[in-house]
Length: 442
Image 1: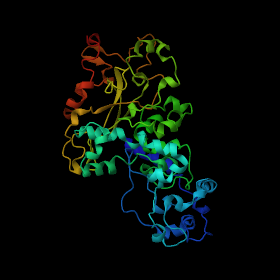
Image 2: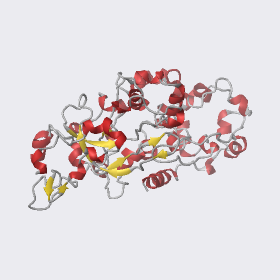
Image 3: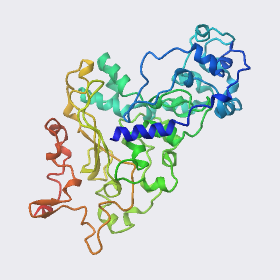
Image 4: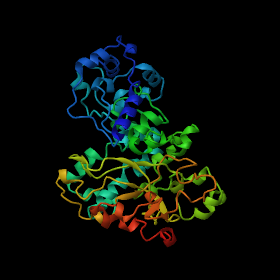
């Protein structure tokens, strides 16, 4: 059901994205880069069919766009591109290749580069040197994910990722790196997870569109939570006030800070609640009691998406993704030292994730929990835990209490009994079994 919802959302997002082909320019000679790519009929005659399926993502398969639709220059976006400074560089200035020919093979020779931002230092650095120089430290390069794969494989850091077997790295590239962005995927084209191709007639967009860019990659977690897509959830309160991704996640954060972080929560430019909500510690009685022990999300998140264990590429998820809410001991106290209890999210990690790529078992799977520190983008002031009936104790919907043989509110917490057998050794250390007040169970 979740995959269907997210797929439907993505289809709705992209139905209106194709350029209006009635605006095509048939007057230009097709014996040129621009002449070919502005002539829709000609592109349909000379295009090369796909040899592999477009990349998908955690939200499902990517919407399909024909190869000629992905490279067509047309519509209002193309008109805007022609007025821009980037247009003056010329096609071969960024893509190499050969201009002035109607022969597709010749045009795409000469070290042709389909996506110039993969050579950002050479192609973008002349005008955007400061950003290009620092982008290798951006969290959009996936260092946190590479770190987890490396650590579970017996290493200690993302720096060891290159030591993995070639088949393992190839599997990661095909299955996990489909969303990790470069310049173009935020500013020119649709992300690969959204079908790829030009998003707006080759126009360069300084600030990426939340729906057409951000949510495409961050659909199953950030996007679908922020928009309130999940059954029984509401849009994030910040979204209802008109905020978008870039209201909190600025270009400075996206482009890097000069130091490669081991994971995103170790990143220096991550936004924090206090930037917009000062004096939280003394704001009310809830905060006075819990400011130094609970993350904000423990009280203010709704249910959020959790993943299941996966065979990468093979049989797929053995635990279908599901909405849930769990509070556990902080799995990253070295980074988020203020919090004892935090929200956690189940990951797709499993001992045999990479069996389809010749790796029967992770050699050090238990090095990391199967539940991650989570900061869901689904904030409400009043949630199932903070809103209580008139006259009830303020903690009535959060603290555990015994009623006969039942434990009221135990569902919010991650206990060892909630873990599958193969998860226990890795994850028991963050379960709350021995961490909650004993009087709650009496």
